[in-house]
Length: 118
Image 1 (cartoon, rainbow, N blue to C red):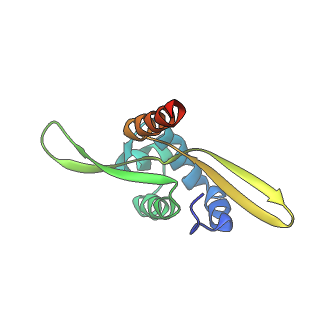
Image 2: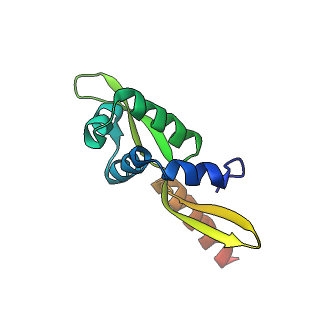
């Protein structure tokens, strides 16, 4: 988990049915706000509020997608594969398993191989 994220904020957002629905759908494929609105059966303003909150907590990422007709639009996808909640010594901690893109995975593997050869 990123140091700036408060575990209580993550637990609060996961308590919201629309946020959970957004994460569920965005984990299957990148989706536009319109697509998420339709899939979640929620108002446009609710979807955008939840998108902003999920992005601020680094649970969702936004990127631009180019349509075949040349128009750009924003799509959203989950930024983590899993969350782990720990209760220890009176402290609640939430850890995320952030997804790596192919370049990051290759770089990490390459660095590991180079260290192994030394």
